[in-house]
Image (cartoon, rainbow, N blue to C red):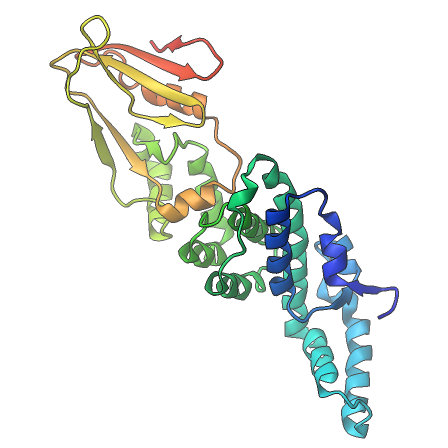
Length: 317
């Protein structure tokens, strides 16, 4: 190993600082599995995430020549060593090893961040079936965007076991940019686990987005309706209904006995919700306020309020 190559596990895990022991243990085991036999890697892989494979062409050619010479002359006595060198420096395996190294590096960074708000006692390493599937998909993730998604998935699975299913791994691996962009736009309208079935989703561009996301397995194919609970007067002869809540924001609808309103909405699938958890949190306050405006003025609806923890109650008119 020369100064241009370094121990993969040591350098990547060098970013671990003061992690709780259960999380650190789970992280080290997962990173060790992810890196597999890649012990020595070009340091440039870790310094430049978008480094092209051509940057290590000379190194690959040099090692390939040594390997060929070793095979021809039977100079290398340990077959395991020459096989490892061959696998690491062959073009396809080189690309996959590099992808795994980048994802490992990003996983350390995201785990350190997620650990701040996690219960360390819950952390466990992913089971072998999950990890094997993860590695199979992750090693083909060549774009920075996809590498970041996979690293967030692994980090979330370590810190909060069960957060991501095998189906989510598969769908993320198949996401193209257009579907990812569609999902990001629709997720920004989320009111929790669904979006309000407003007029914009009934035709045109947003309807088409919904249909594409349905085909990708990220949204339900049909809208559903949430109905009022049984009438139980609790406030000045009016009943209260909370149709939606997300984060620290929730909506309260006060209604009379003969009110018949309902809330139509489109749900994200389990996979959609899991992928959404990797993205920036939507502006739930704005989204829920907009959805709540659809109840204002409806027969039997007496009052609509927007509640947020630590903020004054807002009457929606």
